[in-house]
Image (cartoon, rainbow over all chains, first blue to last red; front, side):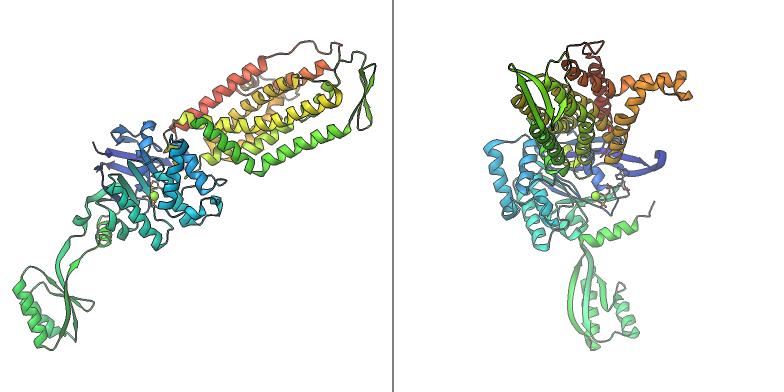
Length: 311
Length: 283
Ligand SMILES: Nc1ncnc2c1ncn2[C@@H]1O[C@H](COP(=O)(O)OP(=O)(O)OP(=O)(O)O)[C@@H](O)[C@H]1O
Ligand SMILES: [Mg+2]
């Protein structure tokens, strides 16, 4: 059983006056998330990430296709006892304190008594909000609200957690803290589904990612698959490589390119790389460093988004 | 259990809004006015003359119960005002519950949509029910202590007043679910409370040609049964006190439960419509 399993999930919103315009928010999205993994759903604004999560929680109804969470159809509200959710732009009842928010939604998750009390204390420490627990949330800063939101999503000790932009508005230290919380949760065997634009962050914690664009999954795989080392070395140097010299080394190795003052050379033939280095040195060029280039998730994301023609 | 949690949170939220507090303050002022302005003169152990701020309230030959006169003017007189203000204090409950970011959290909890919507509805009705209880029960005590007449029918009127509000609030909930806007809720509910419900009762006597057509009659009949019957219910409530002011039979008929029964049915229907819409909507 996959904690999250969708098949050909499609959502078409009718919008505009008289519902004449269609917005294809999701098109035939099939995603499986395995137990105990952190899954990152990436995509530009309006790609359909929030819509996807909303359907899995039964908040929005799909136009076609199926969506299941923890082996149950997404429309079964009882299964939500085991699910946690941090929505984007969440708004909690303003008259409550941070602690009150946790108590209220804890009760709505079916908890109560000393068990809930203990859980609230525990979570306020985990998200570092204990000192503000008695303050009304209308006085909270954005990052504080986000922390309370995260605690709220974890109140029922869920098996499956959906987080829509969890680090939105949180400072760098807080972001690191949230990442550590998520890693800790994964180590406890929880499954985490993450929506984010912050690619560097997703890269650090996710096990697998999918990229969504205009409602379609354009690529999915492990983070390693997205960030594989490119078969290329970058050579940093001091000195001037003129056209003659460049022609000379390109004659040694056809893959050499000069871009923004950096030499790029394909990793294939080690001997020809050595010859290129020798040629450079013999022409008085000082080689400062040579390193294998590793593309970041951000690089491949931007490549993928730009490659795909806009519909 | 979860129902009570939401109901209580909704009442608490309403209390933190100024509107419900103003509501309670107005009730308190009316009670104070009655407390300080009321004087009863007794003869042979029986109340003989009733004074409100020094003005004698004329008591006819068939005088029964002075408390009913006071209730008629205070509770009866402010009934529509209480409905108006009650709606004002609670109109925002469902629209703000349906706002993005809030509804998402509620819907991610293990509670059915019917349960959620009903809890919010009940929260609004309970908030006003509690405010009315404060005012009615307070009046009951004040009038009881000053005149010696403990008129328990006030509590009966309280039950019916809450029922009246509950049916209006079902209309408000329906409007809230389809529009998600406080403005729309208030405009249409007030339109019904103060204009439409009057027209429905009196349309035959209004000298407008289009009201005398067959189509108008059909539409008005549908509205009469489809919406809470405000005017008939208010009349029945006032009648309870009016009948007690004198032994002379001033009304042809006794208390008629039917406006409440019809309104309860239309309220239930409106709530179910609201639920159907709520269940189908994407948030
Ligand atoms: N209720 C709605 N009615 C009509 N269109 C909607 C509705 N909700 C979302 N959409 C549209 O669906 C598309 C996907 O929106 P969605 O919120 O899922 O994007 P997202 O990937 O979460 O974007 P972001 O990164 O900005 O949060 C957008 O084009 C949006 O305009
Ligand atoms: Mg989004």
